Amino acid sequence: MTARLIDGKALSAQLRDGVARRCSALKARGVTPGLAVILVGDDPASQVYVRNKVKACEDAGIRSVLERHDATLTEAALLARVQALNADPAIHGILVQLPLPAQIDSHKVIEAIAPGKDVDGFHVASAGALMVGRPGFRPCTPYGCMKMLESIGMTDLRGKHAVVIGRSNIVGKPMAMLLLAANATVTICHSGTADLGALTRQADIVVAAVGKRKVLTAGMVKPGAVVIDVGMNRDEAGKLCGDVDFDGVREVAGWITPVPGGVGPMTIAMLLVNTVESTERGA
Ligand code: GUN
Image (cartoon, rainbow, N blue to C red; front, side):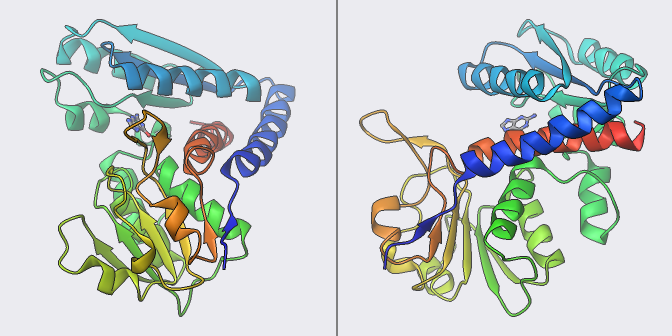
């Protein structure tokens, strides 16, 4: 069997069209969605992510305000910027790109964002809302993964076993919560889990979010399973690759997401969805 591809690029384009329509409707009422993006320092990967986010906003009709700060910025100065953006009625979403320089406590900064403007979904209030099933912002990457499952008709996951590999606050933990909310049975593992393959071979859905190549290989996958690859790594030739051994796993899985062109574009699309949602809610 060769797995069918879940095309994140095509799906994200559809979602962005929907955002653009909602932005037009808001503008007709005199409201332009505004996203503030804060970048501290010159981490090369962060610069690329931020550039892509700002460009996607422009394309969809969201006004983005990019604030670049020197790597020596103090925590107090950054907190003051967040407070100012919280109070700015033209700003509906605030995103502080991570990682932050060592002198800044990123938890403190994220907790300073008004939960109603937390379009990244990283605030403890957003995490808590997800945990208890209350409305809040869902972190963009796991939210995008759920949209990918929906796109192949997997909406109610009752009776399905999902295995999440990775336990970050940004992906693994919220992913598990969203899968649970969709009625799946969920196992959360990490790269050090004993006999990981014994668990993943039972899974109808595997989400790999470790940040290490070939965490999931063909022998670890049940035939026909859905495999979602959140990884962003480079192979020895410098080519972008995920956490999944794509060439091997695609021969066993039923569905698989490619890297690039899979989860990556979905993350950005969901940021736009959260920002337009925030504007509609009147943040
Ligand atoms: N750094 C890596 N991924 C992300 C993300 O989704 N949001 C923010 N703010 N920082 C990140």
